[in-house]
Amino acid sequence: MRLEPVLDDDPREILRGLRGALHGAGPALGLGLVHDLPAEVHAGTAVVITTSGSTGVPKSVVLSRDALTASALAVSGRIGDGAWLLALPVSYVAGMQVLVRSIVAGREPAWLTGAFTPQAFSATALKMVSTDHGSRIPTYTSLVPAQLSKLLDAAAHDSTVLAALRSFETILVGGQAIAAVTLERAEAAGVRVVRTYGSTETSGGCVYDGRPL
Image 1 (cartoon, helix red, strand yellow):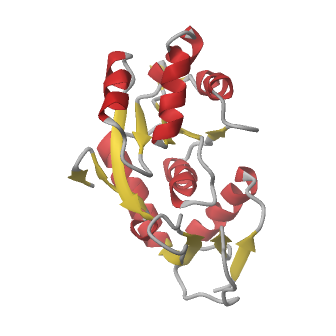
Image 2 (image 1 turned 90 degrees about the vertical axis):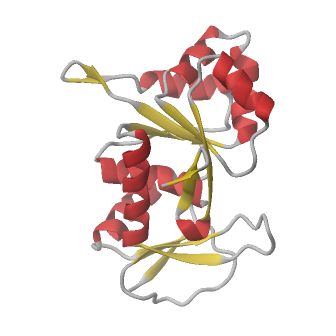
């Protein structure tokens, strides 16, 4: 199978490529690559993606169509189906999986344009609110602790940011340990947070609030 390196972090281009890779109709994608890779990978590969390097030198990890799809289905089985907002870099597994979950759910994701700010996040989140046959479509997003803290700081004096945070059925928070005080602030504000733990090798989060998927 051909491997196609993706040099542009444009979510629209990566979403198109992921659709083809997951359905077996297109080449595997190379995301965030830090060194040369062969032009061919084994059949069934969807993505070769670089780790964050949090425990050492970043590595390139091969993820199959089956692994990514199984992860997305396990997440929906735990927290439910709906529409996703991409607020993380798509060249790393947590951001990329937001797009995979959207593809598996059959819904177009939303994403931020430009820098991450509470105002940009809120505007995009509130535009996602919609219904299907009279029932509200649940919305989800994935953040790192620093992003959540920044949003909670803004929500303390901006009702629009608070409304945006409260609009999500679930906000996944991972990438590093989240401080207890941040969780307490989120709960007090009525924001539904689920702590996630995982790695690139596990296709992202595989333990939610201490319980394995």
